[in-house]
Every structure is written in structure tokens, then in C-alpha cells.
Amino acid sequence: MLDQKKVFDALTREGVDFYAGVPDSYLDGFCKYALAHFEERTVIAANEGNAVAIAAGRYMATKKIPLVFLQNSGQGITVNPLVSLCDPAVYAIPVILLVGWRGQGNSEPKHPQHKLQGEITLRLCEIMHIPYAVLPDDDAAFGEILKTAAEYCRAHRAPYALIAPKGVMAKKDKENVTDGAYPMSREEAIEAILDALPPDTVYCATTGRATRELYFLRERRGEGHEHDFLNVGSMGHASSVALGIALSRPERLVATLDGDAACMMHMGALTHAARYPAPNHLHIVLNNGAHESVGGQKSAGQLIDLTAVAAACGFNTAGAPVTTKEELLSALRKLKGGGKSAFLDVRIHCGLRGKLPPLDFDHRAAADALIDELNGEKSE
Image (cartoon, rainbow, N blue to C red; front, side, top):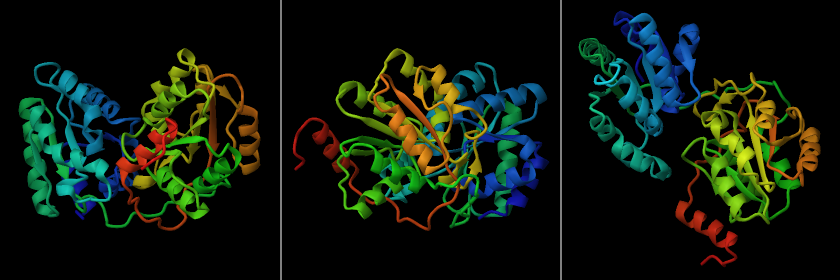
């Protein structure tokens, strides 16, 4: 891993002193150093497009080049602001992009959601006419590459991308960030939900630990996976998948197991409850106030009243977050049969229960099993 002090010293020399983005485990060292030493100039954005726009505002206010950090899975969200806001033919806003390169050369065969994204990472830059450099694990080389990037940004008033392969901006093992803010863990909350809801409930679990914990809880309990959709990619979209199922199968209870950062990434999805009521949809946010799967950086999840937001969007709610197993079970009983989509903010603590193995399953077969179950067909 690059020496992060030297990374930030180089950034300072080039006048880059503002950082906005969405955390990524491939950029864990960078994110941790920025928050530890430059918290007042580091913004954890709701999504990557927001980060580009925030950076654009910073440039306009200071004429200093900002840096936007993101996982390559978020490149798609940045396309619109990069080509219609930052492009030299439009407003000519220079930004340096620091992109974690997941799926490089199919380096994660057990995570097929990263394979195609890894293949097109560099090509997306080329399509948007954004020059780039792939970072080596070499402190001196980083300084020279950054100098080239900053000079390009100043000369052309345009973006430049720094692509970070695995191990360049993060150590091999992430720190297990823990706190004692609330009594329940995510795994304990998920198991309580499995116990409380009908056995044929369909679950749509969000990207990160929620998918892994649901999968391995099913294994431990001797249960099948045919009722579960594990949204291993497309962060922030699990609740929309659940809504599509709920609207199409009104006789089935459909529960979203969401994360706070995932929920906020595409918070506009909450507004569907007002226009497309689905009384069989239960949107549960497992809220630890952190981007736990990629390093534990804080989110705004426990700083805002998600319950009030959901209520204003037309959801039936419990009126307040729940923090204990007893409150969770009571809220689930209250929300059943409420006549419209329901929302529940479950406050949990940070911290992982030891190391779970990576999810290693046939994604297509898992989707087909759920499809067959929903359509009353027997899986082959």
C-alpha cells in the first residue's frame, strides 16, 4: 500500500485539499487518512454523482482542484455530472477522480458483479474523454502521476482519473470498527426478523454484510434460499427490486433488508410509497450509521430521522426507530396489515461477528430459484 502521508503531502503540493466521495474498501487507507487528518475538508456523499457535484461547487468557490473518490461500481452514477457539468464544452470543471478498480482482470471470481465493471472501467474513462493513469504501488511514481494529473486539470479545466488496483490504497485486511451504541447487531436483527415474519416472506437484502449474513443465517438454520434475493451489486436498489415484486405479487409479504447508506444513496425510491402503495412491502433499514462493509466510515444514517422522512413519503411507520429486539418484534406486529407500505428504522451497533466467508454461489441459479418460487414452478 502507498504511504498515505506521502499521498496527501503530494496532494497538498498540487493544491488539492478537498475530498468528496463514497467509501470503497480498495480505497480504505485513503479514506481513513482523509477523515483522520482532514475531516473538515472530507465529505462522505450519498452517492458518487453527488460527490462530483459537490466537488464542482468547491472548484467554483475556490478555483482549487478537488478530488472525488469512488469504487468503480459507482462510475455509472458519475457519468451525467461528468459529461454535462464538468466537461470542457459545458462548464469546464476540473476534478481528479480516484477510482478503486474492482474486478480487474477478473481478480474476484467469487464476485461476478464486479467482472464486467472491471472490464469497462478504463473504457468508460475513454468514452467520456477523461485521461487516466493506473496507479502502481510506488510512492515516488504516485507523486509524478499526480503532478501530471493536476497539470492536465489546470491546463484543460477537465477531469483526470487515477485508477487504484487492489492493494494500492488499502491494506489487505480491513479494521473491524465496533461501537456499543445500540444492543443489537445486524445479524441478531435479521434473525429476529426471520423468526417474526411468515416463512414464505420474500427478502431482498442490500449490498454488503446484509446479503452475506442472510445467506449464512439460512445455512445455519437449515433453510433454503429460494425466498431470497441477494442484491450483491447495484447498491441502493434493493428496495426498488422489492417494490417490483410486491406490486406484482400482492398476496406475498416482501421485506427489504436495507442499510442506511444504501437507503440514502437513492432516497428518491422512498417516494414511490405515495404513488404506488404496496401494503405487502416492508422496508427495514438496518441502521448502524456507517459504511461498514468497506471500512466503517460514518454515514448520516443515525443523524437524520429516517422514520419521519418515510412517513412524509407515505409509509406506515412505527413512529420512531427501534433499538432492542423487543421493540423490533413489537413494531413488526404493529406494522403488519397496516394497509400500505411500511417502513422501520432498526438502530444497530457497528461491528462484525468474526469473519464470514465470501459469498460463493451461483447467482443465476439463485435468481432462477426465486423466479420459479414466485411463479409457482419447481426449480430444476
